[in-house]
Length: 114
Image 1: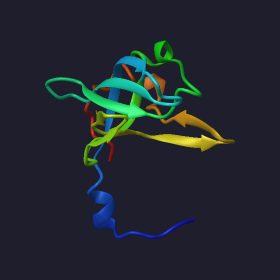
Image 2: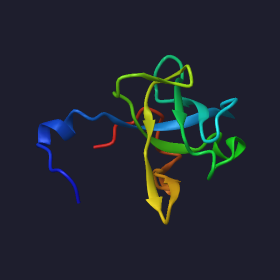
Image 3: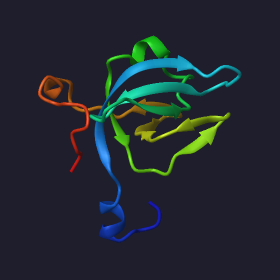
């Protein structure tokens, strides 16, 4: 399965509910999408994700997702990414992890995943 970690290491990961506000392809990139994601902060976070082979930008707007919010920002193709979407690999396809749709009217962007 992989390396085991101590609970304290996992506890340091900040997972939150996010809502995708905008999504667009990154020019000159084969796989990257640039997303603005509301995670309950003053303004949305910019997050880059290599999911364009599986998702069209217009399909993602208003989608609730799970976001790792406390990764150190990094640049890809000269654009800063300030988090990471969680996805599962299902037969070589990235499937975004999402809160239960029945609960979305009760969830707010920024809700902590515990």
